[in-house]
Length: 480
Image (cartoon, rainbow, N blue to C red):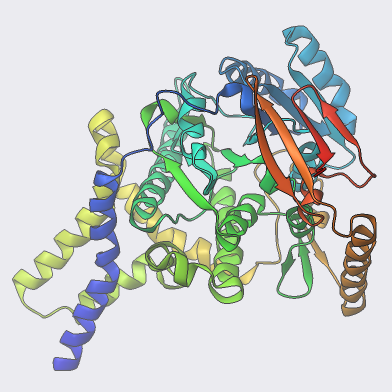
């Protein structure tokens, strides 16, 4: 009996300590304020939008670009695929905007598209955005506020679902589940950010980074040569990789939870939502395993987030936890009633704000609980199929599926490492010890940053100096 009581209280503490602390942290979190005289403005921002630009999505893409233009960034770079590039150029031409460029790659792959755009960025801040998001006009000042401090390398914001207009009952149900997914994610990101600066992942739906982090050749190489399970080259899960890179390289991450920084997005409002959940679950498995057991930086830098988010990939199985707690619970009416009450509260506490705004959705709460139990099945299946990277929920998105997870033999892996070594040896011979200065003109004031031969690669140049970029930036040797 004593053993059962010990197990019960141990399970209870492990299960609900996270919820209690995160709830308090969520309520205490305040976003980093916009400074009165910011050094960074929208003119320091380039927005990169990777997009398949399918015919049926043209209106969605156009609306996204229009919304982003309203925030007045320095430039928008649209990266599509070769077969659709003319369609995108025609769309851009019809918009009469002068600060949109169109690039393309041969095959659809988000990492390829991002890498295609990174060397073209001419501002100090790069924002990646999906092609189906809606930005408030107030977004950029809030995203830029943390980046006023040099220690911050990436910034994410809260998200909400743009639900269907005049939905059918089925769309309402699936839309409700999608909305709850985003709200749960906002809750976890905000709470963990407050406690120790960690979070599950900087979502690629809209995320800001310092360009110098992305343009560094060490990053580019890692981004395009990520390994999974020692035998696969992984070309999916781009936002997870960048989040881990920031952590491993000592850059702080900010999460701006504020209504004026809230980004709207879309999710599937039919059974394809299950396929989305499956894809997200596989990505979480791969990234969290890598974070905890391969790179291991989070144990020291973000101990609370490790417990509250990353470990849940291994330990959070809602149905098993609920059954286990009831099994080991003291067989007294008050104890059983208290545990059941706690379970019920835990199912909706993260969504109180939503239910206050949309009280009719309370009727769908039992469905949310059941789907939470079913998600355990999704997660288990995802764990057994981590070699799969298919979307399965968007037309044309799986054209590059074979490229997202490439099996590498030992010989191929050794050749890749040999090529990497040869590349760096060649670069060192070109720039053995020459320091360079990167001068960025910002609103008439010059910002100086010194690079050695290693970080010179950060501006993605492999030709001898001098380097002329554009009217806003240039590189030159330092002459004493």
